[in-house]
Length: 114
Length: 116
Image (cartoon, rainbow over all chains, first blue to last red; front, side, top):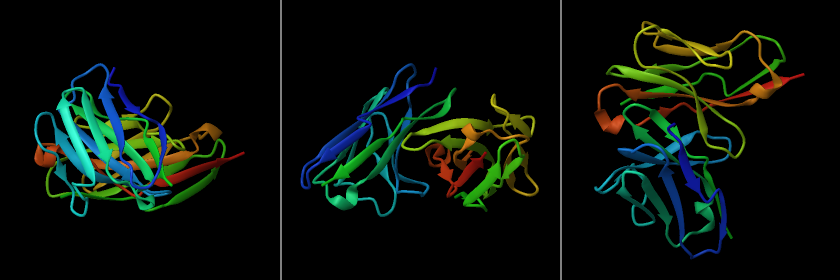
């Protein structure tokens, strides 16, 4: 149990376009979802925390208008990178929290903006 | 707020040797502690966790970690490593009582490289 599916695993987009990343909890209801960004050979940086049905809480320094997070249901959260630029290229990972299962991570999305 | 320090960024060892990956944390509240493993271009997989009870926790693949409250440590150990254990290992901490939505704070990671 406690599987989180993240799609796409890899995406290449043109500068100025928007990209949506989905994170689904497959067999449990995720009360809270987290979005992380990971730079090469570095740790995970928490970008935002979202609770179902409410606005996401962004960490300091994260642009909420660039990284739109929607958590419309207990099984789905999306991260949209708007007007992407090359500096947004990174590895994005979602994580879901459910009371019994702790934290479960998606497999990550490698975003390359060209 | 919590913080995590992983003292070694890289740990090279030979196959079948023992290994210890060090993790220290700081927190003003009670915490849960985790070790995650990450293989290249993949997400994080939970290796083991300490929530309460016995301070020694074990994973199914031979790793163990011991919660030491007095030393605020949660070091990861394995008595004999395999080539397949080569990966990045992250120590993480969260508050144990609802603060900040239980968000995880990660250490910077330790790259374990097992050589033949």
